[in-house]
Length: 243
Image (cartoon, rainbow, N blue to C red; front, top):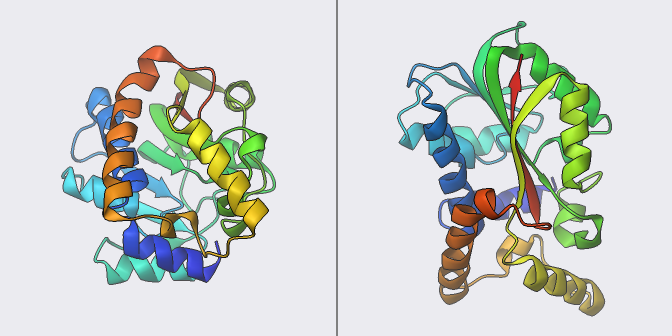
């Protein structure tokens, strides 16, 4: 990501509706898995520490972070969120069969060869262990955030499912989420592009009132998406297991 984008995220991730809501969604899935507190967990692409914050608050202490960016590593250190190793999702600096659980949230869309990234995630997971993956959905939603985050692509659900299966994973859950805000986000992104609005990140477009309203909508979304399995959403979530 651009440095300015990291800086915005670092300042807002603790309270912004998007990051808060995602942490609630992710921790609910982790709790369903009944992962022991001592589990070996890897957070790939820590960015400025949103998942590390979640895992720490949940009591997990055997957690490692991995990120390619020196800026991200510094932000996590400055926040006291633990040590993050510099490394590439396509060549994870860990031995085979190391981790009980991996988070790879909004990561593989950044790399040229997402199949290679998924294969290496498979390699470092223990047999029977799971990875939680999220990716941005629908190329029609391409906008400012994709540009400043240096995304390579957005995904359809079937595309992600097929790539996971091709790597040997068993897909336990997969669905679109952030479906309630799909149309408002689509319109907002088209307006930002049309009006040539200059911001470092969409996360800057917020206020206390907007944050409150969006948080309530997103909370309803993440509670219902896995059951409704809507045909669209801003993101795709997959929970996949190594056999």
